[in-house]
Length: 311
Image (cartoon, rainbow, N blue to C red; front, side, top):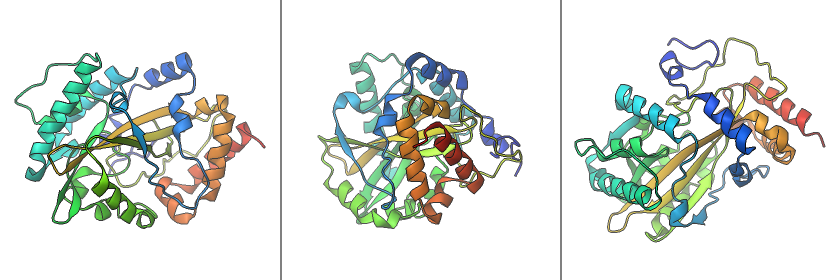
């Protein structure tokens, strides 16, 4: 596998870098994003929390200033890597069509301009061109919830086709400590009502801004880790996830919006930096290996956090 020497990413993945100037401008114009305050930063254990919160219809999707740039990137991926970013089993066909209807209705109802839908295109491909969020469809069949479809342009170190058709437990089998909450997740899915939308967040730290990461592991870059005074090359990456059940269909729409910001945002949020440093220090080996590809990255980033937010 040919790797990009700077990021350690495969060349065909590194080619789909976002325009980082857009994110830099968002930070410079508006300051640290509000979603930093939504991060769950309590020290472990536990290492995972279901941590869902109710949200109204207005908060289901979150278009932002990066929308145009990210939709262009998503369109490229759907054209050039369609077999990687889009899959749908027959069991999810009706849910895919219903999801497209929901998305178009939401955009129109909230005054968000969008291109016309191409009726000849698969409904999930159309969804992938309309919103910044990725969408996975969980279908209840054979006594369990299964990942039966998705448009997944911006995955965080996993591949859609690796997990297509699997029940929730197997979908998450590589996630460190998932067994501690797996039963609660299944129960939550069973009890989710069509009139309720919920959201949750996760967090990861990456030494690059790339959104499209359909790989199992990031190889350490060949250059040494050298953290700049502004925290470069590190980025704070969070998945804003929502779940809503489709009425009259035994399916759940799971959206994933990647929100990312240069680490320098924490220079203005020492409270977040201190809490994050405490959380990183509480991780065990399993979660460290899952969250960071290289312990040198973890140590370097933690040292920077401690430097900018001493106690």
